[in-house]
Image 1 (cartoon, helix red, strand yellow):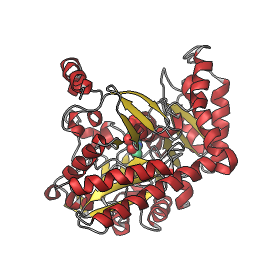
Image 2: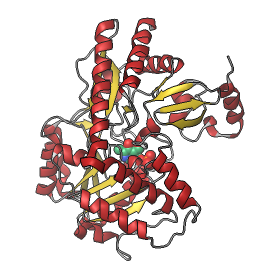
Image 3: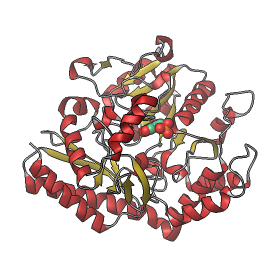
Image 4: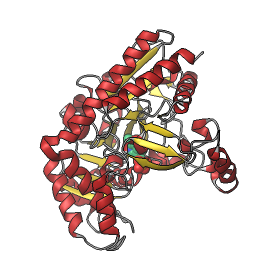
Length: 439
Ligand SMILES: Cc1ncc(COP(=O)(O)O)c(C=O)c1O
């Protein structure tokens, strides 16, 4: 069988760091050569040797419309012929901002950026500028991009390095981060109201913001306990800290209004990325007018040559129009498919009964944990009770059967509007075989 991926990887290793441009695409995740993809169509990816895969990763959630959606192709083809990027004010910029403000009740104004990381950097600076405070309260296992100040306790750690739950040991996830960068970053256990109340009593009055993912999405999928995020919002208001909901993953995924909508939240600041751009880099910071005014010239600085790229904005518009049509049918569809896929995996695992498997999901997102626990509720559970090596084996075996999921247990799978019930059935069949084959 041809293995062009291996030969591309051998070449890539000579000229690219790890053969790729992000560790999650290379040997650190795949254990060796990743599959090199040549093209995508609908819910399918095709590798350089012509093998076909049902894609459940969808570019880490950037593709709610799937690959090469006809409206996306038509829009890009039309618009690219009129120029790629102007770095000027644009009509489409106003139009898309109007759509977003109409859709999101907690957002009066938006500022466009390119990636989730950049939007978060600007949001943290804005929170500090607006409140005049320095501390950032974040949670164990939550990822808000690779900026120095919040790149702390975002990767799984050995259980002996977690520290006491009342006082998690703070561990930066990278060399090259000066201590000053995370000196004012407080790390708290997530999904634990008491831990948060304790942290707020200690640091709340110095906190510029409390930042959270709406659903923990960088340790598989871990939903918030009922009322937990609402209590967080309340505590922020009590202490004058901004409540910052990072919707990079959950935005335009869980519902039209993201995690804020499904959990009834009204965050002070939100950031979005991934799905927002419908496949091209697009991110945004949003919030109440009074807070967002902090980004005006002379107050809190946010620049960027590629901010509000016109091609990406046109795709954002297409994504929103397509997902919102017919009373938000696109969001209903991805939710339905995601829930069905998660239920199917549960059935398959139960029927096989050879491995401890727990499937956790929220609407269109789901993840499969190999664990003896009944539920994974936070970072500590994940680090202590999830068998990540087993998940990688599972995902790599699935890949050989034409099912593409990222082999990292810390990530998750996603449905798009172009997945079908037949895709779910085919995926379930492949999973049943893999669970029988696995040691
Ligand atoms: C919750 C969250 N915030 C921010 C980011 C950073 O986004 P980007 O990769 O676009 O910089 C990510 C990326 O996975 C994320 O999951």
